[in-house]
Image 1 (cartoon, rainbow over the protein chains, first blue to last red):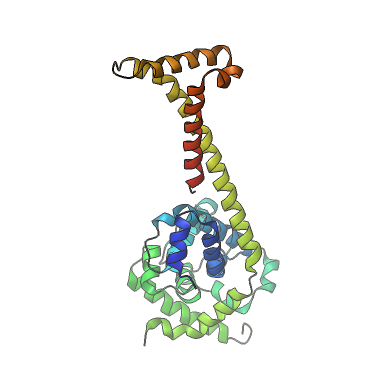
Image 2 (image 1 turned 90 degrees about the horizontal axis):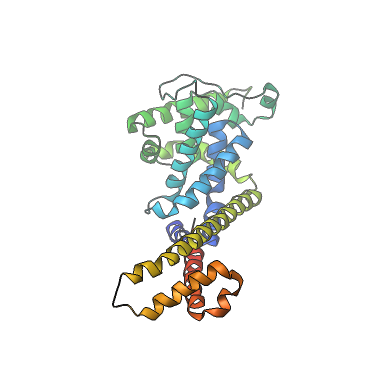
Length: 174
Length: 119
């Protein structure tokens, strides 16, 4: 099986087939990440699509390393752009307390336990948990993607995971 | 123990949730947009390139005219073609074979560039 860097190199030479394979391999990770960051399936998939289109344009700049970290970094930037457009009044702050998702109340009933528990975290914790736990990035990769200090990322992951476990353990949630 | 291993159970839960997503429509959607963008880009490159090449070709006689050692037949042939283009654009290709050769080379080069060009 061809590796991600091999496929990326082929895609950089213009192979749409190689790029389609990369999309197929990483779509679940990227869509999952975008959906959890936005709190919306449709919004998340839009961001995921923009992520892959940007990746296609910039595939020549991929210089090895973990492809998932590279694509998740693009996804994070796309999310920030959308966030700035849609919620310019709330500046992103990794020390901020809970900022709930904006969603219609009738959608709440259908939420899965995991997603609902994720919503209870602060935005910074949610970002770090989504990147490191759900998308599988290392703490260092998440720190490089977000531009936050490594210690901050580690702390948010630690607290986020702790809070997530607590919410999942609650009888009304679990 | 690596820090990441401390939440393997939660990572497995997220991964299970992600596996439920159907990849086919999403991949098809992304690749459809990729192909449309690539096609649009090629058309733009080819169109702009053709216009640029045409403008450049019209300057060739003037350029060669100041270059004494260049074979005069090339200059006169292009000048003639230029005049003919102005008067009888439809008959151009049949009256001046050199012009056809130049145009073919330009079109071939642009087509090669546009085909190899990636988004």
